[in-house]
Amino acid sequence: MQKHVIEKPGDYRQLVLQEHPDLTPGPGEILIAVQAAGINYADCITRMGLYASAKQLKGYPMTPGFEVAGTVAACGEGVSKPAVGDRVMALTLFDGYASQVVVPANQAFEIPAGMSVTEAAGFPTVFLTAWYALFTLAAARPDQAVLVHSAAGGVGGALIQLACATGCSVCGVVGGAHKVEYAKSLGADVVIDKSSQDLWQCAQRFAANGFDVVLDANGVSTLRQSYRHLAAEGRLVVYGFASMMPKKGGKPNWLKLGWDYLRTPRFDPLDMTVNNKSVLAFNLSFLQARMDALTESMDQLCLWLNHDKIRPGKVTTYPFADAARAQQDLESGTTTGKLVLVVDLSA
Image 1 (cartoon, rainbow, N blue to C red):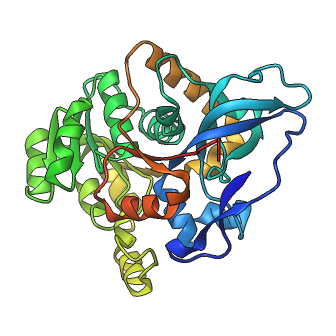
Image 2: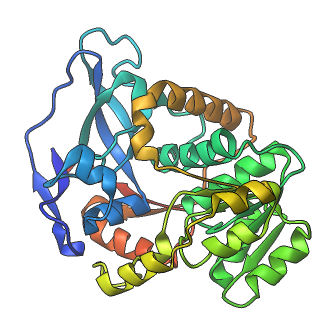
């Protein structure tokens, strides 16, 4: 088997494709012959050495990657479903940039009919992140006003779809003209291009009384205003800090990180109480111990897929060997949808 290994944190050169012995599933596990592996921004932060769960749950050297899709190649003792030959997508909690993965059987899900293997590889992490943010934490309901930052990305696109399927009024925010139409195609009522429009002036026109839910993975660049533009009983959900990270070079700018950390707002519980506002935050990788809840969410997502309430996001593919280039493109902030590595099983 082959896998990308990060020996120590650093730039793109730390992603090294290596040969390793084939894997064997243990009791309750399955072996997946990986055909495609999803790329997430967390993988980039893992490579830089800044992702908390990578250090606490895994350590270096390690293989990044949270999601794969492929075919079940073998089943461990006690596994009756999925069966050998089944097409599955799976959550991996690291180790996904590999031609083989072993996961507990309950972390694999049948790929719905009509979904390609590359679409499947890019589905679980972003849609589970969106589901947890929008429903578990924010408890979004029909007719509520929802603001989605980074609306043309993997999680942002999933958030738009889920919010629209729920009957919310959705305002998406993107950072370039080439991203506007994609966010609109997912169902957003209004899309603000903050590179050419006044973000908060436009947002206020959309929701004059404030937003019931704001979903923010930018961090310091938007958090303060995201909170200010909440309606009474509004919920700000924080799930990332992308604006603190470099867009090129692949290595952290420690001076910028320190400055941005100092500028990151600390929300006053007295103000939150008086104004009936809430701030919630999470990291999905620390929630995989609650696999029962994630499985329930995935089952619901697959049901929505089968009933055409949602659809897979746009996918851009890269050869398996080009993981570094894919991460570089993702960090640039110019991509839309999901990036996915395609494994050549004949190699």
